[in-house]
Structure formats: structure tokens, C-alpha cells
Image 1 (cartoon, rainbow over the protein chains, first blue to last red):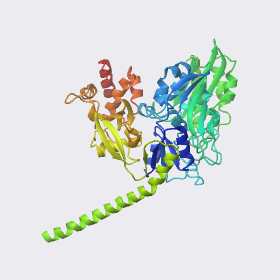
Image 2: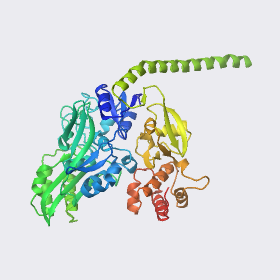
Image 3: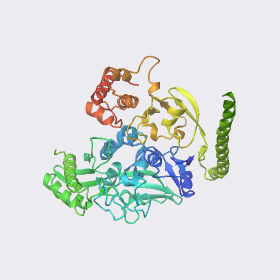
Image 4: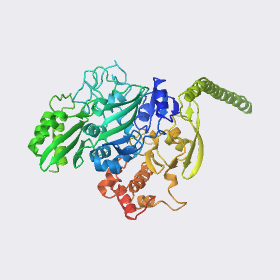
Amino acid sequence: MIQFQYERASTTKAAVSALANNANAKIIAGGTNLVDLMKRNVMAPTKLVDINALPLRNIKQQNGKVIIGALALNSQVADDKLILEKHPLLSKALNAGASAQIRNMATVGGNIMQRTRCSYFYDTALPCNKREPGSGCGALEGVNRMHGIFGTSEQCIAVHPSDMCVALVALDATVVVSGPKGERRIPFEDFHRLPGSQPEKDNTMQKDELIISVEIPDNAFSKNTHYFKVRDRASYAFALVSVAAALDMDGKTIKEARLAMGGVAHKPWRLKEAEKALAGRPANEETFRRAAEIAMQGAKAYKHNAFKLQLGSNVIVEALKNAAGIV
Amino acid sequence: MDKYKSRDKPERVDSHESRRDFLKTSSILTAIAVAPATVAKAAEYNLGEKISTAFETTPVNLTVNGVKKQLSVEPRSTLLDVLREQLDLTGTKKGCDYGQCGACTVHVDGQRVLSCLSLAIMQEGKQVTTIEGIAKGDELHPMQKAFIKHDGFQCGYCTPGQIMSGIACINEGHANSKEDIKEFMSGNICRCGAYPNIVKAIQEVKNGGQQS
């Protein structure tokens, strides 16, 4: 790891100022991703700003929404009574991610900011437009078994690795960020971006902004939810494909649905057309198959990840069946 | 022979010292060059109390296995390296060093974490418990006893991390079934053929109602 300056910020304003005054400064909270990337020389910030002293750990109910502080730990959120009661989908997604040790360290803000696990991004000997713009994409013609099938570009086909974010996009969350001009609210769907010609930019936040909290509006989806993650081993691995499904049921009819996928795109992938196809329909295999078919429209596979097209469809159906309780 | 020695020794010492002196001097110069601006900026932006420049060591207070320690660490030193190399607590193992194997699992303020991904400078004022700190004198921790009884190790390298994780697994309330234990022990990835034995050991301690 190359050397760096280290500062502890005692206020949000101080943290934002530190970012604004050093283009190579990075925020550190849990450090589970950043320290790893620094050890591998993928990232080399010249300054770390430790924000653990900021009062951003609380989870509370306020004005029809649940507000989760950016420094709340993944394990804390997963076990939180309010989250288990109102948004069990989030708890399920969190527990599907990483390991118990990492969930005890990783924060909500850090989880949102985590970088892709694409092996070409991690290997500094290989080209990667996300790590080094203009160097090319090793994955495009390389071993791309883990890579994207939606919204990819000629510059980058990496996927966002978070499970938590798949649940948050399905739950219509909002990310609250703070910058030199004050606070700003970004709908979760607009927070992460597709690679396009600038894959080095993971999200729509400015360099001098800091995540303060995540808000989830109250909804009627708490009773019928499922997070289904398919990976190469039973646990502690990133998703090949994952699906967050939430249904608002009226008897056996779906009033409204929420559906999002992980492991398939540069961002957590919301499936709005499929949601529309589920609304007002009976909860059965036929409905779910049709929704899955709609969801997978526009998917484009690469040499080694064609299996994700069929797998994605099947995982959607299974997630919906589990959410509806008809397994 | 003596002549050779006496001539050789001072030379070697000299060259060693002069290199060290050079490093010291250059570190101090770097610190001087960087420090005033950083301190001024810190005051200006109301930053927190502790600032460490790149090549400077900073005092950190930790309580390790119940003993207060004042250490001096570089910002890039991990808790794992400080435990092993500054405190000679080599029970905590360096496996992958990238947060993937769990061999470096310790408890910080009662929570299990990966010491290889924890910067020591960020642990100021915290309580750290390592495998060396769980026995009471010669009396082994129930989890250590259960690991021995059920042969929960093969080469033993992953064992300290497994034991620290096993204790936490019970304290967190995630040892209610075999499936639960397997899932919540999945961050300790090296278990060779000892998987079922480790599960048995954790179940035994859990059923004995033992908490750390």
C-alpha cells in the first residue's frame, strides 16, 4: 500500500471540505473495499478522511419513511427491528452479501460506493477503462463469465457487486448527499450510472459530496418479499445473478410489484416493465414467466455469460414464487 | 582475524547507520514540509484532532486482551500487522491479507472483524481481543476446548480465526442450527476437512450456554 495522509473529520462540513481541497482524497468508513483496493494498487488516494466520528449511525422512522444513517453497519441494519418489520427485503439482501466479519465493518454508505469486482479492474497489469480510462477493456473479449448483460458499452461490461443496492433500488430508496452547496437528494435509480464512454464514473455524485443517509419510503411490500441470489458456492461469493422481489398482494392477486436484479449491469437493475406486467395479475407461474420474459428483453450476452439469459429468467420466476409464498 | 573484524564491523555499522539516518532525516523533512500546511488546513476546515502525514507515525491507544497499549503506527499499518509485528501476538494469522479467508478474525469492541482490512490508526481507544486473550490463565475458553475435543482443525492455520468467529457466531445469536452456523461461519473460508467438526464444536458450546 502506498503511503497517504490520514485525517479524522469531526463534522460533515469538514469531511466535504477535505474532499473539495484534495482531488485525490477519499472518504474511509469501514474500509472493507477501499483498503483492499489500496493494497492491490487499484486505488491510491493521497489522503484518507476517516468519517467514523460523524453522527450518522442511527436508523429511525420519520415522516413516512425509514432513514438509515450512512455509517450504519451492514450487520446493524440487517438485524434492526424497524428494518425487519418494514423492509425485510433489505435485511435479506444484506445477509446474502459478504461475510459476518465484513458486515460488521461495512457501512451503508460504503456499500453504495463499493467498486466493481471485475477481475480486469482488480489486475493492474491488464487494461481496464474503469481503472485507467482509455486503456481498453480486458473483459470484452476476455473471461467475461461474471459480466453484464444489460446496459453494457464497448468501453465496459463490469457489474455492480452490491446485494444491498438491489433491494434499495426495488424499494424506491433515495440517497441523501451533502456537498459544499448543502444537501441534495438522489433517487436510488439515478445514483449509479451505466458505463457509456465514462466507465470510470460509478455514480452521479460529485467528487466533493458525501453520502449522509438513505431513505426508504413506507410501502405495502413487507409481507411478500424475497431475495434470491445465485452464486458459484453456497455463501460468501458475489452474485452471478440475484433478484429482489416484493409483492403487494390482495388474496391471490398482485396489486403491485417491485423487481430488481443484481449481477447483470453496471448498476442495480430495476425491472419496471416486468413490474407493470405483474400488477393486477394472479400470482402464478404463468404470470411470473411472462414477467421474466419481459424483464429479459434487451439483454445481450458475451462469450462466457450467455448462461445468464436463461438463469436470469429462472431466478426471477423463483424469486417471485418465493415472495408470493407459492413454492 | 581480529583485525579484519574490527575493521569490518565499524564500516558495516557506519553504512547501516548512515542509511538509517538518511531515512530518518528525509522522513523528518517530509513531515516538516507537509505538516504545517496540513495543520493550518485542519484548523481552517475544523477537522478532527488527529492528523497523520504520509511518512509519520502517530500514537494510537488500544486495549489488547485487556492490557492498555500505546503504539506508534503509520497510517497504512493494518491492525493485523500491528498485532503480529509490533505486539508479537502471532496467534492471529495472515492468510490472504485481502479480506477473503477470515484467518485474521479478531474482536474489536466485541464484534468480529477482519484485522487485515482494518487500519490500526482507525482503532483509537478500542478494545481488541485476539486468540491469545480468550483463555483465563491456563483454563482454555470453552470454544478452544470444544475445538480440541471435536478435532476442529487440520493444519491449524485457520483455527484462531475460526475460534474467534465461532465465539462471535454464538454471541450474535446465529448458531441456532447447523445451517445457520455454516452460513455465519462462511467468512472463515479455509477449513480443510474439519468443516463438520467445527460445526459440532460450535453446537456443543452453544448448547452448553457458554458466552465469551
